[in-house]
Structures are given as C-alpha cells and as structure tokens.
Amino acid sequence: MKAIFERKPSDFNPQDFEVSKILRLPAKVFEDVLKSPQRDYDFIQDNIEQMYCDSSGVYHCLLLTGDGRTDGLLVESEDYGYCRYASYVPNISGLIAPVSRLKDLLRTRWENLHLLHKDVEVQPATIVELDEHTLTDAGKEAWTDVLDAEVVKVYTGYYGLQMELDKVKPSRLEEFSAMLAGYCPVSDYEKWVTQEDDAPSQSPQMKL
Image 1: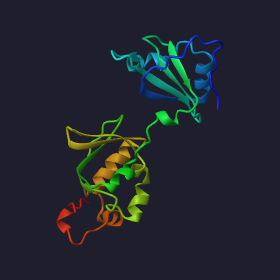
Image 2 (image 1 turned 90 degrees about the vertical axis):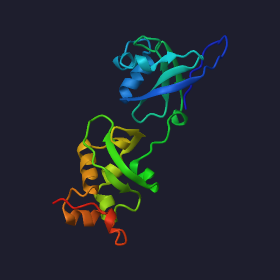
Image 3 (image 1 turned 180 degrees about the vertical axis):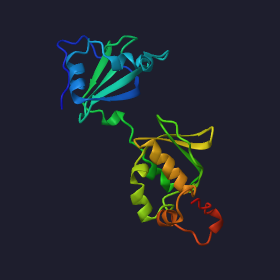
C-alpha cells in the first residue's frame, strides 16, 4: 500500500466529499495523471460539471482510477482541466458501490417490465412477468450476457416500469424482451421459458 507524505504539514483538514462520477482510465493514463496532475486532461475538461463545492462545503468529485488498479485520485478541478484540488486514495474499494446485475434483481418478481439500454435507444417489448424462475436452465445459459448486464437504475418512465442496463449489446436486450413477449419460434420459447401448466393465460401468444 502506498500513501502521500507531506514534509512538515501545517495541518490536516479533512473535507466532506461525494463521488459524482468514476472514471476508470487505461493504467498508463492514470499513472500519467499521478505523475503530472497539473497538466490539462480532456477527460477532466469533459466532466467539469461533475465537480464543484456546494453551499454546505461538500466537494463533489471525480474518482479517477486505472485498469487493474485499487488506488485512485479524487479530483475537484474548480472549472479547470487539471487536478486543481486532488486527494490520493490508496484503496478505493470503500468508495465504489457494489454492481447490481439483472440476475441479482430477479429474486423479486417484476411485472410489466421494460428493459432499456443506458446509451443506445431500443424498442422494448413489455415483459409481463420476470423473476428467477422465468427461465429454464437452457434459457439462463442462452441469455447469460443479458442476465449479467449491469443495472444502472430502475424507474417509472415513458413505457411504465423501466430498467436501464449497461454492459450488454442493445440488440440482445431487444431480442431478450421480444423472446419473453412471445416473438420467437414456439420451440425456442418452450426451451427457454418455464412453462406453467396451471396458469396458461399468463403465457404470451407465440409469434412465428
């Protein structure tokens, strides 16, 4: 573990802060920032609106880190493109919230759900019901990439109940939603989706 030591410090005055955004940089770029924090960097300039000190004296910062690194740098640039205010953090694990994946949220039963992509507009089909029992083992294997998608947020929006996802191809989200809505061959639906003989009215109409 590494730390920064100041020679004959006059005082230590810890400040309240909040992480507005996390930027995971290539390891070499992050190392360059640590060595030359007074240089201007485009990724700092592009995120100026994320950094400010509010009326309560709380610093809203970027958290910079590098691929494969466990340390980081808190930055409040005060409308500049360089690290005008910065604090080195030897271990950032306590500053990063655990990532929730779609499969983690399926312990709850979701009804009339619409899956959206964080960055790309998709046309979501309404998923009538979705929980940990919806897919068969074959279905879970076939749609592993979608189930492993990161959940950005869940909210009520234009389509109703919406879940915004990241780290998955937009086309796969559309295909997954369409499949659960019945827009797939009957053979695929029966292979991937658990059949409930006691509730046939809840099964969507098959579209060939």
